[in-house]
Length: 210
Image (cartoon, rainbow, N blue to C red):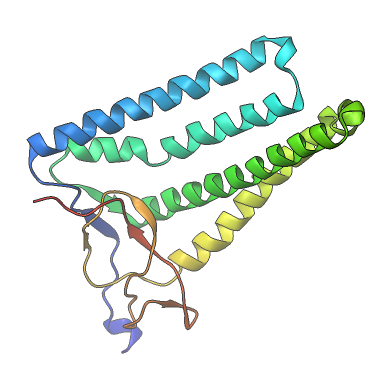
């Protein structure tokens, strides 16, 4: 198939969970309430750790970073999903699809690394409690947190570039409501990246309810 005969899609139409307004009201309230609780809970954690000097310890430092990641991760996709529950035409551009994919991958990877750093922190505290304060200095903790963020961002850049580089063609109406990784046909009749089976950008969350 020649490249100049291909039709490239610049935006996607998200079919969502349902086209019925009353059916969408329930998920809107449910996801909206969960999102507000996430913001409130993690915001309170950050506020309490910042204001109480007794909590300025390595464990709570990582917990604060984890709360920031949780707020950013949920904010990367949930607000758009809530808006789409209220709209009749649910569309997302190719650029917005890639942007949302980038932040989801970056923040998800960072969260995994922060959890690993917290596990290592607890291991050091149990294994050598007398030298814990000396070993887990503020500089060491800041370095581990910085590495977690940088590695998560770098990994997301590579995966997003590889995923979004091939043109996405064919059906632009997708039976999902938000962006994630999946296998979709590319412009050359396959679902591959660089000739190998690989991820493609697609809008995902659940199947359509009729």
